[in-house]
Image 1 (cartoon, one colour):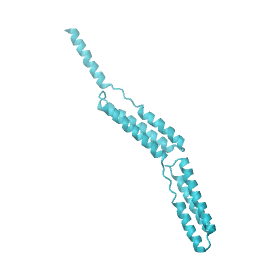
Image 2: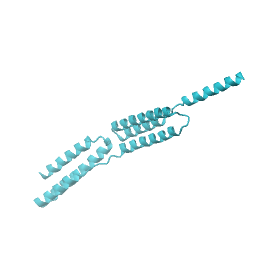
Image 3: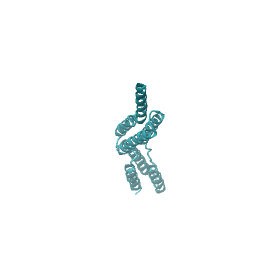
Image 4: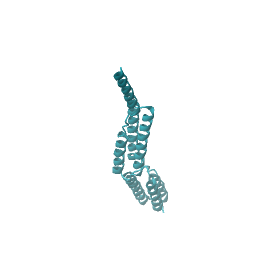
Length: 171
């Protein structure tokens, strides 16, 4: 009965780990392995317990140890941070360009944000560490590739230059 409590705690913990979308498959496997190790140690302690009171103590300690396994998601959050960092850098670069109008800057920043959002969705959907890395690389590349072409200001300058040339020719 004490071992069944440990097995039940282990099954519940494994289900909870599997349900977490913020963990990669690699992180889930590591967490489930840790939970299984905790359960195995608890069962050994139950087998070694000389009295019912000791069995109860081992059962409580064991279920607590299994339930305490709470893996920290690292791979996906770190990948998303890289996307956010790339987006901040791109927005700053766009803002620093004097050849763009405010409308052109807004359009470029919107495009960069869209690329970042798509990259984060791909990261969330990626099952493995390797797939997360691929999505991160593709996403940062897509954000960095946003390079708006200045149109309004150069066209206005050209119109002024053309008008000047026409005036000079007329003189």
